Length: 343
Ligand SMILES: Nc1ncnc2c1ncn2[C@@H]1O[C@H](COP(=O)(O)OP(=O)(O)OP(=O)(O)O)[C@@H](O)[C@H]1O
Image 1 (cartoon, rainbow, N blue to C red):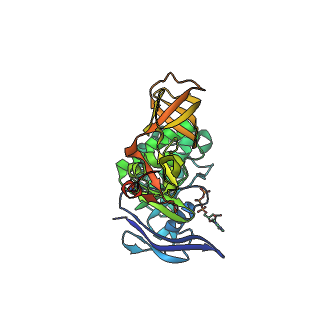
Image 2 (image 1 turned 90 degrees about the vertical axis):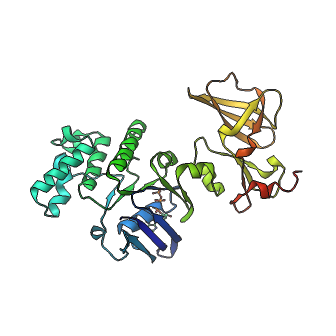
């Protein structure tokens, strides 16, 4: 088993506390994505699992063993970075083999592991090439190959796709998901890109300012965000967050409604609005509107629409999909919030 447990992890750099106190369970075989804005502490957390940073206090367990004092090489982990740092004078095969050679593994086993990794990563035709003769995506695959051959209990990825262009990122995302399915190892992946988190993870950990906001499967976070921060962070286009007055409650900080949960009518509805920019995406249409009373709102409509910039319309939210957040930014259950008659 290679589950990872972080218990009461605190991390300070000198006088600055960047992680106050984190508890996290990463189940065996899961693809767990740590996501959050720049500086929220996700790389620091990953580096502590790797053993590249020491927690100021707290313990880290991998597969039931307390590894807090262990060197990185003794933790059964392997880390893939954003910059893949291949040896330029070595071939792809030699780069993948390098770590095994250091471990003094017998040649026949090394050869078999390199061949197996190359097959999984579609690198077989490239084994004799030098890194300078590869594309960015192929180089990143070689870096992942170096990890796979070591047969780690836990793979750690620190923004491995952020140097790639958008098309290649999408392709590599699919390949990583396939890789996880085929080897079934525990994977922990850091990104600031919520789309990457949504598509890769079976468990997402949303971080903000050194704290965990919410942990759960992607659709649970999407459908049931527990904080205003998670509501705004997960989903594209973003959830609309209107002031509490939108539903007649001054003591509610914000009312969240996803762009696909607003209906547009020409004759009447709850919130009058004016149509701004229209983005036709083919399968659906994203319309940016300005409500008369509560500022900008984004609406997503299926298919094509005859709406034109400047049109006056009315928006009506699907009441089942309202998310209410209190002054502390935490979710309020609608039945509690709306039990008092709206003004
Ligand atoms: N070696 C260090 N010394 C001092 N402060 C550090 C050090 N490493 C990180 N920090 C600080 O710790 C905080 C968390 O950094 P970290 O790199 O973990 O964030 P991140 O969420 O991975 O951000 P990004 O997405 O930008 O990489 C930041 O405020 C950063 O400035």
